[in-house]
Structures are given as C-alpha cells and as structure tokens.
Length: 25
Image (cartoon, rainbow, N blue to C red; front, side, top):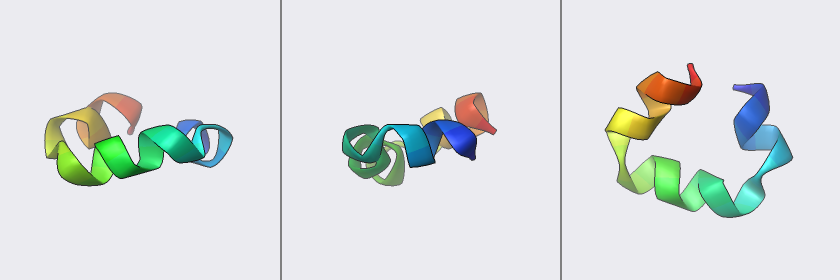
C-alpha cells in the first residue's frame, strides 16, 4: 500500500491492473 502512496502515477496503472495490486500488497 505504501508503494501506491509513493507513486501516484502508478496508482492509475494499479487500478487498471488488479494483478499489480497483489504485487504491491
């Protein structure tokens, strides 16, 4: 979750790619 806060640009990508959410989580 911290990675999303540090990278706002990636936030949009993560929302589009659920698989990346698992990677960050």
